Length: 468
Image (cartoon, rainbow, N blue to C red; front, top):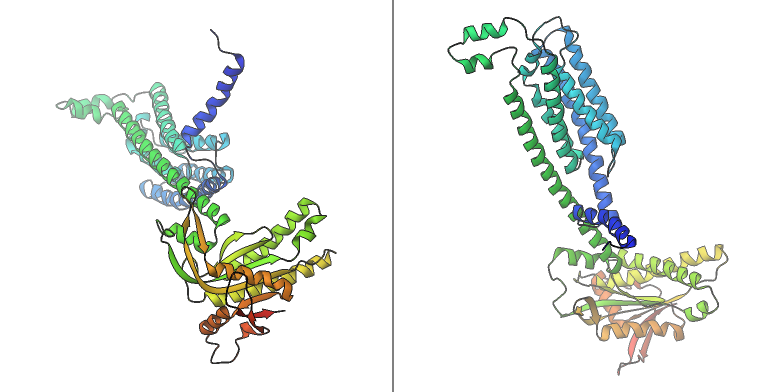
């Protein structure tokens, strides 16, 4: 029974995708593509520089071994190789490129011509087979080595196959068109007749096919080995790009200090512990009324701008963005590892947030948009830190310190304050900045003391400090 046409078409369409998946088990994300592009570009740069260095050196070497004016023929070949390398640098890109492959084939063809074709500028006459006596095949290894700097493992292996094919083709053509020089074979046999193998090896008319085959086989083995080494390097490159992608994805959900902790340790956040930290809450005032009659896209746009500005200040002051809370956010300082400046950093962050809000409102006024106001509450105290969840883990910060900071932020409305901090935070800031012995620290300027303020959830009233 024949399969349905639709199914056949589907299988045909999915086959290339399956092959691509086998060839590239890792998804080609922007990080992998950028890593491959960077590797290719750097490799081509190195290959071009290598040509600029090695080809002049080979030019000098050729003069040493052949100190005659006709050496300019080989200098022309070397110059063409340098030019071709520059062209490869210009057209090289990640992925398949027929022009790039054509230039690589041109490289190998130029090399073959320079090694096999007799120098047309030379007056010397010798059997064509003598062109193979100079062991010029070794120069192919230079091109192959340079190829591993920039090209994929498939291209490196293809270079090995093409080299073998060109060398074999050149050998066949040379053997077909060559005219043996009379008397040379007989002279070798007469001189070394006692050793027929030596006589055959020293025959100027002999092409020594077994040696030519040995050159090709050894070159193919080296090319395949280098190709698989290049493949292994590409996989390491993609693995590293995957790690960069994972780290970037983590940074979208965690603050930089948490990402750093996660990336450097196996299970850094598993240990549940109590720790003294500073907690900051910020929330837009009357955002419900602001969003009531506005376009949803405009509302989301305002929230994104707000979160971006506040998040920037949290990270800039060494804080951890614990979570977004709709039109607000919660940040902690001294997590996951205490640094001894958590209270001062939290207060500096709160003041920086006020400055960021003022700059944003000036920009909004310039475009005729209403101002956005926010209340901030900061407290210093003991919290419980640790992971919660099973498969999907979340680094949680819970406890009375979190609740008090949230209550302080809520108190900014009835008190018409922009920022409220607890007495515990103020004392800790004074300790951390050594401000207790020098009067009121500059970070605490402008605060008004409000003693015995009832805080929902606490039995004992708190002394708080408000900034209006």
